[in-house]
Every structure is written in structure tokens, then in C-alpha cells.
Length: 620
Ligand code: AGP
Image (cartoon, rainbow, N blue to C red):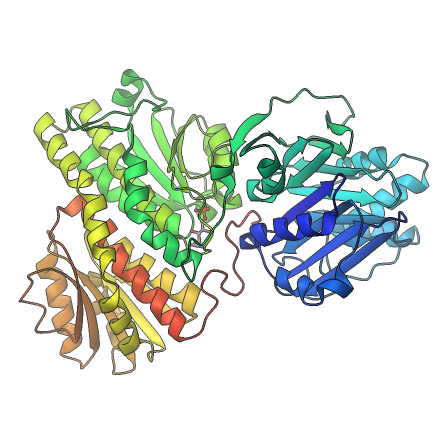
């Protein structure tokens, strides 16, 4: 969602906040703004519509000097992207600046009360009420801190908020309510930074020889930052002792490493992501899965009755693959559900139901809310997540971390294959623990997984075929992706990748369902992407491809190397190596990502930050 940065210290705040905003831009890029308390103690605000670099276009004119300030990069919820709606928002007297991530659910009611009390509003945002609430508290004689805390106590909804007050000894206040967004805090050597996420803290971690102590705000907590230090308190004003966590630069470093885009870098990192996901979870001598971090006892695993996998977007597609894996290898009934729907259903969840949430960020509002519902109903809860300390990891009984490193491209890539790797390990582990998989089958499955980093590396060694196919297919404005069985969710993921980064309409469909409706779409203006690796349903997909060709459809297929049967029927083919069925989803994913990436490049799209999207969606 939105990104917040705040700095108080002895250096010029502008470059530090600007750098932090650039690093948090993946959270939203509809508009950006910075407020600085300058050397005279005055509050000055600069805003831009669009990306953060807009703030820098006239650096010399725009850059404000002063060592206290706040910044914000916005993903619009209330009010279109515009200068007026950009944060920071200021009060009537231009003394208080506020930045906000989340939604004030009772803002209409609060706004009316404030208007009745004489406050005037200039934006369409819910955020602006926060500024006026702090102002109102100060008009009633409260200190800035107390007025800020009072404002927090008046709000409904889930959010992170920060504010700064003009004046020579300015302080920054921040608080967190609910699960819509985190606040991280670092303090060193008379300087303090807050951010929505760790990359904003990099300037202080640099200074602290590659590492630093970081505080994570919990819901209902507030922090006050001054040059003298950082104070945590609850929303009644009681001090809180907070145990900081040591964070290294590697955890927060964001760098394209010479690639044109983060997305391409992250696709290329996939062999490593798969290997990292397996690290310490596979005993390579016995070829068994060992889950040292598994939160259920052997008896609890034996007692399980069903598994429900939940997630949103790409993570939902991973859940759909997980359903096949858990049914086939885990020996348990499995369902996969969109978290945004599941949270509003009334599903049966007993003590022997294991719910597995999947999420790169661990902060997706719908996923976190669905997890909370599961917890309230007494289900067992595991999260497969890439972000340590995230909401998901705090709610779950246990976390199986992806360990993929930060994923910056808004389109998820390496965390998708990491999720699939962990879902494989989980299914094998459950099957072995429950006695539905024997040792030799487990070993064969593990062998398949251990070859995956090499096979993926081979697929990524030569990108020429993907570029060539992208040139052939970039002209199409409609795509239908087809797959069956364990590969059907990869068709959905292929369509999602293409639509989100190229803005081309693309639909993913189970190939067997095509004859029940979508085949009516087939003509020479639609591209059909048929995923047909050699697996147990290959012959069925081959028939579906023939049905398309009989209607003059244009077919791009992903086939197993050496396939001579379908290769002659389709218009273009990309190849993956022969591999066992459980690892095929990860291999078939690679050509999908690469073709989507190159089509988006040919269409001159903003690959890393596609329009209207944000990396983590922390509002409903
Ligand atoms: C993936 O390319 C998308 N950006 C999006 O669908 C994403 O997967 C979804 O918003 C869920 O995010 P999460 O994995 O962080 O929960």
C-alpha cells in the first residue's frame, strides 16, 4: 500500500527521506510528497503526482533544508491521484503534517464533526481528518504527543500514521492500529528513522556498520522520535519496553544488480530461491524432508482431517497448486480458497483443520483477515511467507519462510516458485509423517526437487527463444492460457503475469473447460497459450489443442523437450526439460514469466511498477 518515511537527526532530512521513498516505491506510486521542518522551524511541503522522482525534477528549487521531516508514496484509496490528495496533509494553520497508510473507516463522521467545528478541508482523502484531529487536540491545550494519541483513539480501521509538528525541536510521532501496515523504527547516534518497511532504514544501517537494531510497532502502539532517542508507548500513554531485532544490510538492500528491471533480476534469482526454500528442510543424505520449524507435533499431524490453502493473486495460484500436492502426496483432503472470499464465508474449521496461508508480503489485508478468522475458530494455522515479522507470521502458529530475499518487482516471480517448493516439501512431509508415502517414494520426490535449481538455471541460460516468441505474440490483444491438472494454476498465473505488466487482456482456464464456453472466443485475433508438458494429462491437453487448431486458432505451447507429437500441430513452442510431475509447475512458470516480461517491454510498459497496482495490498 502506501509507504511512509520519517527522519529526525542532525543531517539534512530531504535526501534521507527521498532515498527512503524511492526504496518504498513498490508499495504505491500514485503520488509522493515530503514535508520538512526547515531551519527557521517552519513546515514546508513539496508534492508530485506520480512517482517519487517527480519530487526531484527541480531538486535545487524543491529541496528544503532542515533536519526533521516526513515523506509518503501513495497508492490511492480515497480520492484519485492528484496534487491535493497527495500526502503529507497539513492542518489549517500549516503547523502539522500527517502521512498515512490504511483506511480511516469512520472518516465521514469525523469529517462532519470537524467541519461543524470550523475546520475546512481541501482534499478528498480520509487522511486529512487526521491532521485536523491533531490540530483540534492542540487547540484544546494538549501537547502534540497527547493530541496525536487522542487522534489515534478516535479512529476506526486499520492503519499506520505519522505526524510532525513545526518548531525548532520538532519530534515525529507515529502509531499503528490494526494490521494494515507496519512501522519500523531505527535509532543510532542522535538520529532516528521510521518507515513502513525495512528498506527505508538503510541510511542508519549503513552508518551502523552493516547492521542495526530495529523496533517493530505492534497494533495499538505509538512511538515518539527525537534526536535524544525513541520512546514507545501504548495509546493510553504508558511507556512500553520494546526488544529491538538486529537487522543486517542484506535484509534490506534493494539493488537491480545490473539488470534492466527488478522483475528480470528476480526471475533470474529463481534457481537460488528454490535452493533457499529447501535449505535445512531437506536432508540430502537420507533424501527426506525434515521440517525443523514445523509447529505441529506428530500426533497433531496424525489427527489432521483436512488442509485449506488460502492466498490472493499469485499466492492464490500457488495455493491451487498446493491443493494438488497435498491431495496427491499428503494424503489429505485439500481445498484452495481466495482469502478475499474466504474471510467473509462461514467455513467449517475444526481443531483438526490445518489452514496454510501463502503470501509474499505477509501483510495482504484479505489474507491476514482470513487467518484471523481461522484462528478465532480454533483451526491450526501455518503461513508460507517471505517476510519475517510480518502480520501473517505473527498470527500463525508457525511460519515456513520462503527466504527469497526482498522481492521488489510488483509482479511476483521468485516468491511464487519458492511457495511451490515449500508446498511440495509440506505435502511430502505430511504424507511421510502420516504414513501415506513410503520412504522410497519420498526419496524419488525429493530427488526431483533437488534437481530443480539446475533445471531452472538451464531454462534461464538462453533467453533468446522467449524474446523471439514475445516478438511474434506482442501484437495480440487477447490471450487465453490453458492447462490441466497441476498445470491449470500455472495457466492462471501466466495470464495474471501478462495482464498485470502488459495490460493485455488475458484469461487462464482449465483446458478441459474450454469446450464449455471459451472455445467460442477462438479466432485469428486471440492467442492461445497451451501448457502441455509431458504429464499424466498430456493426451487430454493435446486433444484440447487440436480442438483449437481445428478452428484456426493460433497456438503457442510449452512442451517437454523431445515432444514430436504436439510440436507439429502448434504454431510456436517453448520447451522445458523432462521432469517428474510435481516439479513441472515451477519449470512451466519460467517461460510464462519470460514471455510476459518481453511482451511488456515491447509494449513499453513500466514492468516493475505497473499502473494501478502496489506490491502489497494492505487495505481491503
Ligand atoms: C502478483 O504478481 C501480484 N502482484 C499480486 O497478485 C500478489 O500476488 C497479491 O497481491 C498477493 O500478495 P501477497 O503474496 O503479498 O499476499
